[in-house]
Length: 87
Image (cartoon, rainbow, N blue to C red):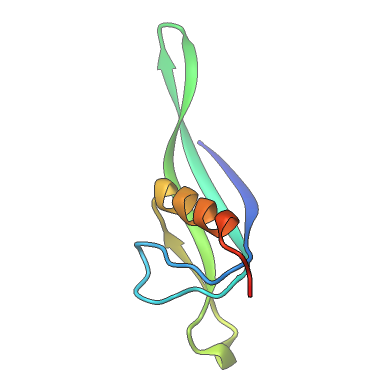
């Protein structure tokens, strides 16, 4: 297994299928986990988990939550964000 962390930045508020509310613009921590798979041609890595760290809805709590998301949903939201003008 291997795990990697990086960040994604949204210039605009956005929605992901996993959430029932709009997430505010900002930088979010992203964690991915891959598992090693041996094939006849060598080893490959297969993505098994993608998680996004989001703040609690209750702003005063300061809590953060890691939530499983669909990689394709994230890609679509980032693409839409890059095409949307900020106001």
